[in-house]
Amino acid sequence: MALSERYAGATLSSVLAHRAADAAEAPFLVHDGQTTSYGEVDSQAEALAASLAGFGIDAGDRVALVLPPCLEFVVGLFAVARLGAVVVPLSPDLTQAELQYGLRHSECVAAITIETYGGVDFLQRFETLMSTLPELQYLVTVGEEDLWYDDRIFQFEDLLSAGIGRNFAGPDDAGDPDAPFALVYTAGTTGKPKGVGLSHRNLVYAAAGTADVLGLAPGDRVVGLTALNHAFALGPGILGCLASGAALVLTDADDAGLILDTVEALGVTVLYGIPTLFVRSMREQEARPRNLSSLRIGLVAGAPVPDGLVARVEAELCPTLLSAYSLTETASVLALTRPGDAPSVRQATVGRPLPGTRVRVLEEGDALPVESVGDLAVEGPGLMAGGYYRQPRDTRNRLDTDGFFRTGDLGMVDEDGNLHLVGRREEVIIRTGFNVYPREVEDRLRSHPAVDEVAVVGVPDAVLGETICACVVPVEGAIVDESDLRSWCRETLADGKVPDRVRLLDRFPRSASGQVRRVELVRWLRETVDSSPPGSSQAP
Image (cartoon, rainbow, N blue to C red):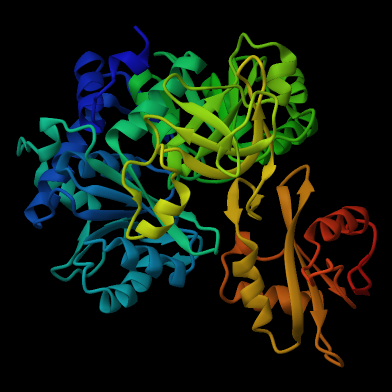
């Protein structure tokens, strides 16, 4: 029986309970040299849920996970599921302002966080945040320091110890697959984050459907997730391994060399990643070859796949590479290629939709025939059940009267039902798999006293997917350079949003109506950005 059929209508807790009962001793997670079984994750999640319930955390409450990839993230995820609460995964790489926005907007009552990460003291950061966020009542810390606590701050290990043996039966044991479970943040068209509400059914559907196509099974070991705060990690990553009985190998560094070393050392069979990871992995393999004979399949998602990447990966890394079309609003994967597809299909398309998902190609709301390019709209069991949290207007604007979600992407469906991605209606830049919206960067640059005009565009790049290029027209007589402007951005923007390149121009190319011709800027930048030093230039 296909996994998508076996787990239709299941909740996260019921999937974990089934796997723990069926194969309690089988490995589920491998991290930092430690292997944790399905039974151990199940018992730890129950213990943590019992302790959190003692704080009064109940069904519908929101609990943030601010953690790198680690065992505690997964245990916390399933503890929240047992409570019937809603998990809010937030990246520890967020700036303090971005983290504060996510916690405030989601109205989290508790957070589980790492003590220190990337040189940041999160205890100090949360001490400030908790004084400004009245809803945030409890903090659970992951770390080994001997810390002083008040009655609102607790250590993760202490809560596990306190909850062991309490036989906690949470609201999710009743099993409502349509109950909200995750609030996953993704940037909106204006650059402001949007909380995408996903149900148990949404996530289990995408996870099981993807695992079916990949043929995941007990004995498989999966690697490549270097962050767990996005829908792909929750669905095909954690839940896909759980549903299939595979083991998930967690690495907390976006390091292709480390990942290839892990493949060789542990006999990893499945490699997940964004295009950047596969490009870097091929370079690493060329520089220092590893034994990758255990790899049987890979899955690339999260950003446009460069021409020729699939063929190169299959020649140099693993025998089969599948491409997926993944959106947060559809609980991650909605379409992907299949192992039996012709090479031309796997190299030029993102395959066919998962069973139950429908794709329409539209022009001004009207459906177009096959082989026509237009706006992509999708509908199916993975489509966000809760819409955008606290943003009903944005939700309505993206859903048509038939319940199809307008993705903002341009594409076509061929006669065989394969989906071709052509471009993006919205001007989002996808850098190393993460969405960067030009307006947010432009607003920051415009606030610099030496900047008169600015336009931020994405330029295709073989390693990063796209680089962020800021074109700036300085104020007349101002003295400013690329280093000044990048430093200015770094003060308030996350590192992944800081422009990779700043070009100073005399003027912008414009349309008859005065709009900046971004397409011409991109074309000009592709020709010049790598061949000339930064400095004042005249755009076409």
